[in-house]
Amino acid sequence: MGLNFSHAEASWSYSGFDEFRHRLALEAGIDLYMMDGFGGDIPFDSVEDPIKPLLDHSDCDGELTPEECSTIAPRLRELVSNWFDDDYDKTNASRLAYGMELAASNKENLRFS
View: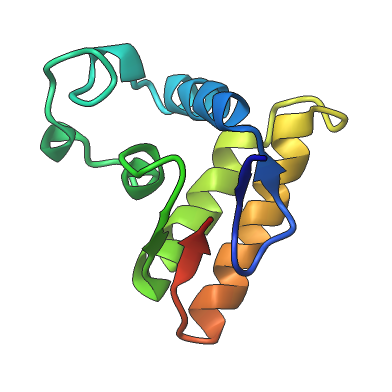
């Protein structure tokens, strides 16, 4: 059991997705532990990075709009670009970015399930 996406072959365990988002946030210069909803008190409204909707999202359900997907996908690719090519998270991030691009081009929401 884990997290899957409507337009992407990416999947993580729930704990794995949590760890992935923490790694991703650090690449963007954000400490998720300091953010509201992750144990801290800094509101996500203060974050201006395009990756914000992915970081500030339920880890088990919900969806991202086509507009969000079209801004998140390139930033996601950029943030993981220096990770090792055989890194599980990088592989899944690439799959997720592709799924976001597909959802955006089809003008469909990317669903988390």
